[in-house]
Image 1 (cartoon, rainbow, N blue to C red):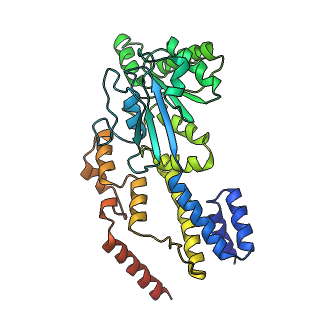
Image 2: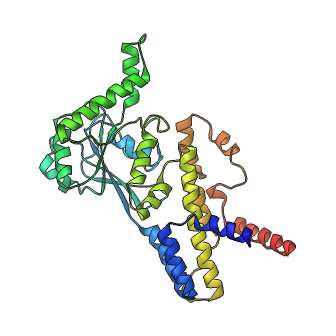
Image 3: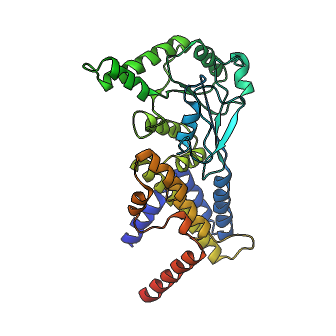
Length: 350
């Protein structure tokens, strides 16, 4: 009994307190039909929840490259936003996440262009809930104007210096003997904070990143802060959309997928106990297996993009994959072989 209680504790730690209380009330009511429908509706809703992230900034500041980086893509990958040294964005341009179509990153018209009018910009660009101002240089009068307009809407804004690697390279060339990376990063951060405080009267978050090196500087801190300040359901989608650039991100994805798997298992168990027309059985199947693999980057297209980021051949990356298939190798035959092996294990175990 103690072992069973410990296992139950592990399961319920994967759910929020609100979810636990709600499921407990339903189960105590003894209505498995309600349980199954409730959990299935949650799973279906999660797949459809839209998440929109708007990226703006000065023309040529690296907006489009950042749009690609936050989706785990390189500038030359299929579906990548067009990049260039001049403004390439004229109208709000939506870019879907490569594996999660309900996640959209919007590349907006650059501020400081002839078409930029601060008092009309937010309405024209249809700003969504999360807005990131990206700059490759010092903040200008355009940033000051835009900051004030965003504050009028009561929106949160996250400021990003997106080419900090170029700033560091320039500083090292100018001061090779006294070059100190941490000191220069602190200098850039203080300058940004000073200008923002002067413009808005507050000190919002400032992130120093390189879209070419997402594993360095503040890129992961930016993702962490965005995740923290989202509501629960959008947070779940956001976590699964993150680029696989660190072990920490992979652990977060694992925890989120485990929560989903337990919900699917509860639905399957309820359906088995009380067969209901129109309810699907959430088991490990071809589509589900591919989704899990894609979330962890175990997909041929994602691996090819990753090779360009880490500078290693795709064969070397694939050789590190143990015990699991890639998304492209999950087919009907693979799923059937798994089911047969589980059936045999259960038979021998009993």
